[in-house]
Amino acid sequence: MKLEKYGWNQYIEKCSLTLNHDQSFGRVFSEYKGQYKLMTEQGSYLAEVTGKFRHQANGREDFPAVGDWVVCRERPSEHKAAIDRVLPRFSKFSRKAAGSTTVEQIVAANIDTAFLVMALNHDFNVRRLERYLTMAWDSGANPVVLLSKADLCADLDAKVASVQEVAFGVPIITVSAIADTGKEQLGAYLGEGKTVVFLGSSGVGKSTMTNWLCGEIIQKVNAARADDDRGRHTTTSRELIVLPNGGVIIDTPGMRELQLWTASEDSLDHSFTDIETLAVRCRFRDCSHQNEPGCAVQEALNTGALSQSRYDSYLKLQRELAFIRRKNNVQERLKEKARWKKIHKAIRKKHE
Image (cartoon, rainbow, N blue to C red; front, top):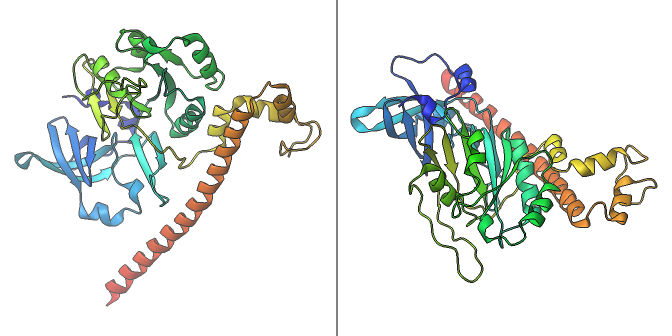
């Protein structure tokens, strides 16, 4: 199969290197605790990184992730391959890995569009969507909000309006796989050379939509619970799926924890354009938006033009981002120290 079917595009073409006679390009379709399913023009392989790759990696983020393009060496007779290197990523959606350690987890790499899926039933949560939007803007992919299960929503217009208040400039599409509505609007983001990822909580219908777009049962799905209409978690790992008309979808498990990994000020500005616009109108340039006279943000809060819950969400993400940056700086210093320790050890060994 041509690499374009797997999402190969002009950017990857520019980043690709000259291959040795025994090397080829492949894309990571799934990961299984250090082993990877690779797809190349010759077929699929179970792959591992080489010892040299492992030795040179500085951290978890250097290892392949679902969606990555890699240089590999195929062993067709064994149905296996060895990964020599990962090509530069043009986008990646990352979060802090679940747990107490400060480690990056790359959810999906080399994605053109991030479909942020929120169901129009009990899952509906605008504050959570703000977090997804901030992380999506930071990923380098273009966010699109998908409001799923539209057939279960009695107040559709009101909920769409509440999403429009926080998703400035982001396309919002209402879909229902059951009622078969909204598929045509998704077509602009799908096709040969394009990669999209479904991101959202458990049970919002990501796997159902994957099957819907593929026209066949690709992912296992379970019916919604009768007591609250919540979908039941079915996808257990990230997986890249080729669409019949070209292009790929990355289906992901529902995220119980969605902690920021990194986010630039620009990403936060994109997600909270209304607050940033107000801040420009404050009397003082270094306004903290607390008790200063002439604060446009406080005035908007007092008049109701800005909701307290949205402002609280903005402050919470700012605090979380500052904390992650402090932790990352410590991690970077430790990595640099370990790198030089490795170099000095190699030098001593060479002179022995």
